[in-house]
Length: 228
Image (tube, rainbow, N blue to C red; front, side, top):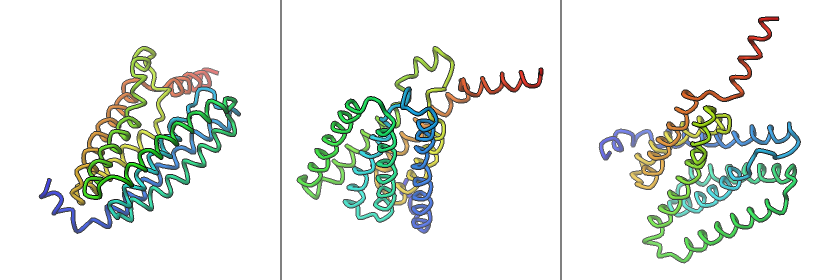
């Protein structure tokens, strides 16, 4: 790992810039979900979790960026925070369960404030490692969350419930941040993104094994048109 870090060291700025660009691009993937909400006129079958998780993760990573004094992390997460706040507002506008959504926002807010408060009072010599561990655990939860419905995916032999654009772009983003973590020799960035790449790869493999119902329906429609 040390050798690879030394080899990549001259490309630190390039890798960091590319990682920032693809991350910002990946953050726009939430707009596809917002468009689905807009088309159907409500949030039925769509959860606010990815957006709230995005807000929380952006805030935590923003704080971590300040701790590391890393401009790339700060810039990326400022953009991510702004975008996810917009997504939450769009979701809230179309949902018919505003009280439940407010409750979830409250829980997410309390969780975030507690962690940011902890980062402020922790020993400066320990905060980087300990706060990094907390972010790593939360990141694993967010990335692995689509797999919580694995039983249903296998049962229905369909990946219709999985957000392919988010997962695919997430795989690219986590790989780039893995390289950046290696360059920085930051064990938390490395561990985070090694596991993240593996989780994203597992989810992408499901799309190969189980095509989405939407894709199947499109094939059926295409065959029907040809028959006509």
